[in-house]
Image (cartoon, rainbow over all chains, first blue to last red; front, side):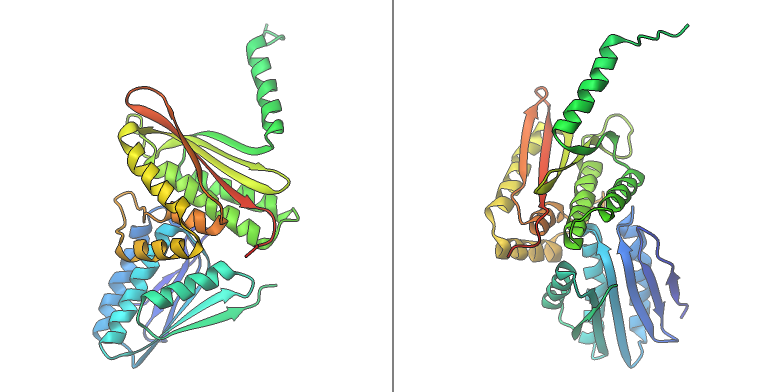
Length: 127
Length: 192
């Protein structure tokens, strides 16, 4: 299936959904003007992907900032991954956060509480 | 020839406006339509201003968060005049010794006051754990509105700032009121 590659801007995240190379990533900043229009193709892609996924899907979130409207859509993405996991597929969510950003760390913890999917918190240092 | 004295009233207005801004330590004030471009411009401006200052990274991030949510609230919920796509209102950022204040004010229909008051009072009555629960409940059960709101903005502001939301409704007439919301971000490092 065709990959999605969206280059990030100052208000939209970088998105890479590439089944062939096994890369699944949302990173950067997310406060799009029309949050549903931005995330809809991503959710549709995941629906399609779920029909014949890789044996293991590792999905990386590495966000610097997202607004509350995006937080709802990020949950929708995670719920797709939960469905995939429920269907017996191997799924791992990696939530990357800057080691000095407690709010981003906590956001990851909260998502991990809400969705039933293997979830790993990964801190990284920012210089 | 142009009137070199200017209009005395408008000169006084400008000077008084300047004094009032200084007195209240306002470093950004705007009245008008809150478009996405405005939101981006103001947050970028404040970000670069803060980057030159001594504020903690976490404080800068909180101010950024609060600004975006406040601007989007006005953009989505302010009562529209005629065919305006985005709502309009007042947006102000002031910086004191101890804190940043982000103020928004916009016109709303009186019928919304009760619901809004209930929502804000409920948020103000909750502690950190209560707010976390409310956030989780709303993100799970809430639906994205047609305007693209998730119903999480006020909760997020309260959580990020750890402060009560200060709000008031000033009556304009029988139909509408002026809704003022002040969010405070402490410039001190996180106190648990």
